[in-house]
Structure formats: structure tokens, C-alpha cells
Length: 371
Figure 1 (tube, rainbow, N blue to C red):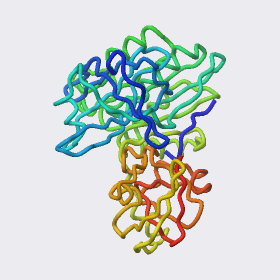
Figure 2 (tube, rainbow, N blue to C red; figure 1 turned 135 degrees about the vertical axis):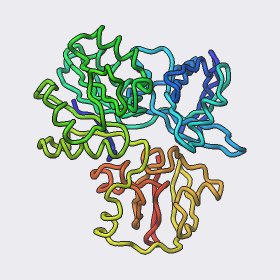
Figure 3 (cartoon, helix red, strand yellow; figure 1 turned 60 degrees about the vertical axis):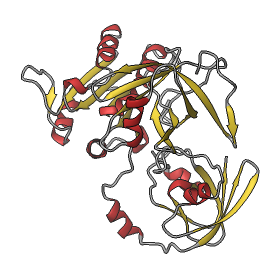
Figure 4 (cartoon, rainbow, N blue to C red; figure 1 turned 90 degrees about the vertical axis):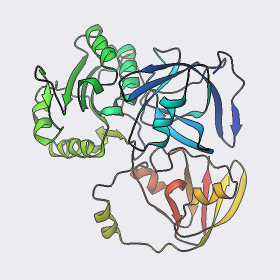
């Protein structure tokens, strides 16, 4: 069964708040685990009515930072099949507003407002499945993979996993002990291949960047199965190298799925030149959300979502960079230009789906239906 990817608590808490078609929860922080020097896992207690989610999905955390409500999406590293609690992993990044605020300020016992789990970097599980998942992860890109790994190992005894995991050094490997334990517990079903950019003298694995030549060598060590799916999540350059090799190996794009944490920039200027520049001017748009119709004018340099939020229209959103699809809507009239298309599949775009957080109206008759 293929992955479905769009391209791309207090111990007892109150009932979830519902805003529009989105549900929000105040979750109790049960524990904060220091995974590495730069990464922490935030463990949330499930509410009295447990939150259901799929492995590979993400939570949107909403916290006040410097007097402003900030939202960021973080992939769940927990699995609904193996973990009682919910957990996300946050890695510090230079000048990262939320990624630095959370480990510096969040403490066990506090509550955090979160949006219901979302995301389509997921799959269905069946005990009769016999498939091979080849995963390419870099740094914090291991987070959604961790959720999927635990789920596959426990739910599909006939399936195997090959994980190619790249990190800066040995100390920066998130979930290293857990992965080693799972590799031993499920011997022959979880094949770990670590790659370190800065490897110690006694390192027995691969060292250096995950480039084309290294990928070719790694592929020679990976078991060959008929039913194979390829997953990737990590730095843009790493994923581009993987995509290029898979294309070189004549791997169908229908078997390749990726999760992006940042908007891509590689080849984007060339794409713009080839596609041509559409004129963005002041235009009126209509957004239909949760049964209400909102009409407003969008200025050049502003997105549809930004304008709506400024006018007090509480539309759903999370990453604000065109990746998570929380703001997805269907354009039933007119034409919309997207600054970033990474989060939508070709099929979705053909059906008229757009992302309001990176969308600009190109005609005067734009109508977008959300939810």
C-alpha cells in the first residue's frame, strides 16, 4: 500500500475548542527529554478523550513569543500503536524563533495550545503487508520517520525498513539509543546505515556528505524487494541528491515521497523564468470558510492568508511557508499564484487546490472554499 502524500494536557483537560473546522487543544506537558545538545522531545499527556492521529503527521504548537502568537508545525515522533502519550521533537536552529524559545522556556507541568494533528506523510497499516520502506533522513528529519518506523515494525511483521540517516557527528544523532534498541529487537527487519559529516577516528560507517557517489555505494548494500517505497525528510540539498539518484535508477516518482520542513529554493529562479511572471496587483477575493463568506482586498506583497488574519478572519494555518497544507483550500473561481508549490501534488493543483499562506489573486473573480 503506497503512502499518501500531497505534493509534498493536564492529565484531564477540557474538551477541545473548535474554531471553524479546526480543533484546538490545551495539552499538558508531561516531560521534556533532552535527546541531544540541540534537540528536545516534548511529551504531552493525552486528554481524557484521546487525540487520534496517523504516524507521520504533525502538531502545530501555538505559544506567545515576545508578545505575539507564534505557530510552528512539528512532526510527531510518537506512534499511536506503541505510545500512550503524544511527543514532538524540536531541534534548535540559528535565529529560530520558536525552535529556541521552546527548549529555553517550556517546562513540564505547563500547558501548550496545539492544533489537531494534520499532514499526509502517512500510510495505512495492514498485518498482511510485505513491503520494504527505504528511508532517507537528515538531522531532525528523523522525527516523522521515527513514528513510521515504530508503527511498521509493530503492525506489519512481514515488512522491513532500511534507514539511511545523516548527521553532523555522533553526538547529534537524535534517537540513537532507541534506533539501536529497535534494530536489535527487530533484527533483520530494521537496517540502519548512519552517515556522519564529521566522523571520529574509530567510525566504521560512512563519513562525509550524502552525495551521489556515497548514495550509489549505499544502494549496493540495500536489500532488493519488489514492493519498495522511498521516503525522505531532511535538508533540501540532501533530498535533491536522493531524488536525482532515484531518477537515475529509474525509480518511479509514484514510489517516492518526501516531507519538507523548509521551502525549497533549488532551481526555483529557473522555474520562474520558464513559467513566466504573472502580474500581481490589488484584487478582491472571496473566501468561504465554515459556512461564512468573507470578501476582502489583497494588496501586492501580501498573501491571501496574511490579509485575512489582519482583518480578523480566523482562517486555519500553521507553517505559513506553503509546506504543511493546513491552509489548503479549493479555488472554485479565478486564478491564484503560489509562491511555493512544494506542499501540493500535481493532482491537487489540477483539481484547483491552493495554499492561502503563499497565495496571491491573479484575477478579480477568485473564490476559495476552505474546509
